[in-house]
Amino acid sequence: MRLHLGIPLFVLVLAAAQAGCGSDAGSTTSGSSDTSAADTSSGSDGTSDTAKDTASGPQVHLRGVAYRFAPGAQERIADATISVVELPGVSTKTDAQGHYDLAVPKGATVTPMIAAQGYHSMTLQTFDNVQSDLEHVHFQTPDDGIFAVLSGVVGVTPDEQHCIIASTTSTKAIQGLTYEQFRAFGAHGVADATASGTPDLPPTMYFDANTVPDKSLKATTADGGVLWTNVPPGVYTISASHPTKKFATFIATCKGGGLVNANPPWGLKEL
Image 1: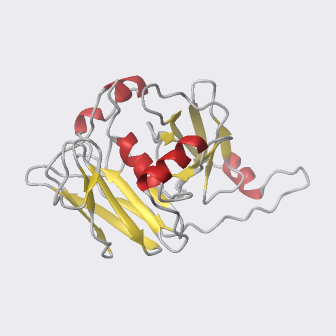
Image 2 (image 1 turned 60 degrees about the vertical axis):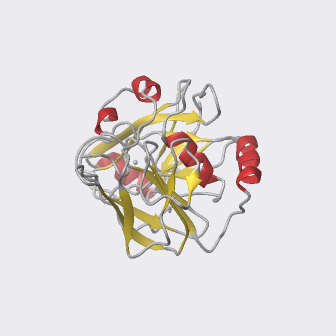
Image 3 (image 1 turned 180 degrees about the vertical axis):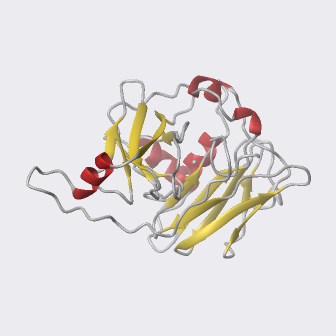
């Protein structure tokens, strides 16, 4: 089975970071610089004030699948905790097939995060002012053993003073697919695109058709992968240009030691 575009890109960059920040069809989604922790004080019943507020007002849902990266078969991750950086106390668990359904306050700023025993935690791009349900917000996560092997292969160590940003110029054809269709699609990329950030980012690295980062490349290949390393902490608007196609932008909120992984079918998706 051919690995889809986002998996090799994600794993290579994750080997350079301990954790991350950081996701489907529809209009361009923007992030927010406000990623400070919410009030986590608890009431007499042990429930956080945030959780109570979430339950009492209008809600929207984030839905997707958590699965393990590995060459060959990709296993679903059961019993993983899916939470929100900005909303401590708001979380849910994945089921036996890795599916999750997370309710958040309508209008909230949301950075989804995953934690599972035996796996490295990671965070997706930030979604700002969420007004409707977000579908296909998937997590692709290597276990600790794979993480260690890939770290050795890539030859990097986590840098607590900088972050990593990764995404994919992904084709419109994958938008709206079920998880099974998405995984079976194959490479998701759009070639001949260039990516940049505001404020300015370090030099952009593109991945070749075999999902290997190549500093000599000046644009995306059919893989579509883009990567920035050694990014100073801050908030960045990430965009892509192409001779004939347009892509969504996204907001990457970088913290030291973090990874923003705006993977398909979110991130730099074709419009």
